[in-house]
Length: 455
Ligand code: TYD
Ligand code: MG
Image (cartoon, rainbow, N blue to C red):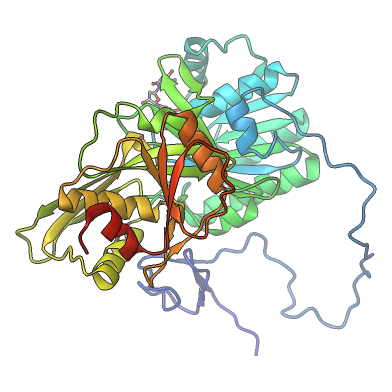
């Protein structure tokens, strides 16, 4: 029997429910279930019936067509994150905390594309045109041929886009857009989904590239249904720590290029400035060697980036000691603490642990494990690591050290920045030739014994 009546689905995992509940059975998330409102009413009959459709013409994977030409903005940090420029007809979602600089970035991007001959339309649903103009003037972009509108009605925007047919349209933000065929308030899940669906379909049909700005929730995900991230071709996150001037544009999904590529910017009085050579950026202000600090030779996308991992381990008066992490995954910290305890016999149970990546950088590579462990041990034992040493390697649950990719690039960059020794996993592919003294370690126990003469 065909199901009728409303249906509900979870915005986190997509599980479908017959009735609304506070908690999703599928993934356990709270308050994530919303009523599904169909985008169109669909055909009246419940099943497809016997009527035949048209047979679809099938093709092969081979193609004579050349890939679509990409447009470069001239802002290298942006072009690289996009996978080598803007692809025509693509839909891009840019998420980030409020005030991080999304509107600034996209206004600058629009101006750069416009100056290179693309027709660009910037639709602001949050600010008045005068506000955007004032910002453009302050950023020295007032002369760029960008067309500007302050509007939230999706119908009017689509009509305008259809008439103007720009090469690039920027919608700031998707949460302020409002479709008159959907009853709920702007920003609600069904509105966001409807607006995204319409705009992405427009992009695919009419050859306009669309950049959508998305707000993020407290948990750091783009507000609204997860399906929005599936609908678009590229998802970029604009991140940075408040109080630091550095901003990182990170590709988390890209149908036209590598994911995990980053672009680094600096927020200045005159807008966002590119940081072309970020490898040493997050190491700045390093004083003399102090306990609890380890330098991680990381790779972000295609570039090596060195970061300082800082740890503080202090006796805790609490029954459940504190674990505070900034710039790293807290689950990863728990795992490393557990491995140190179980495999090396070094307990952290009675200690508060604070872990921090200096400079406002976020590190997501598993290759940072060994540097994290080194910082923790150095803080706990109150022994400073040699200041000219970089560390990388993934720690497995057995306590073994696993080799990580691009070892030589990491070493080369570290050498360039004046480091002279490194600790790496035993099976790392290093053919030599660099002036770095590399000590290879098979497992965490060896590392602890070697570095801290404890364990
Ligand atoms: P904005 O682009 O409005 O952020 P979002 O759209 O992500 O909410 O950026 C706002 C912040 O950027 C604001 O706190 C001030 C700062 N800023 C500068 O430091 N310099 C500048 O030139 C501009 C335009 C903004
Ligand atoms: Mg904004």
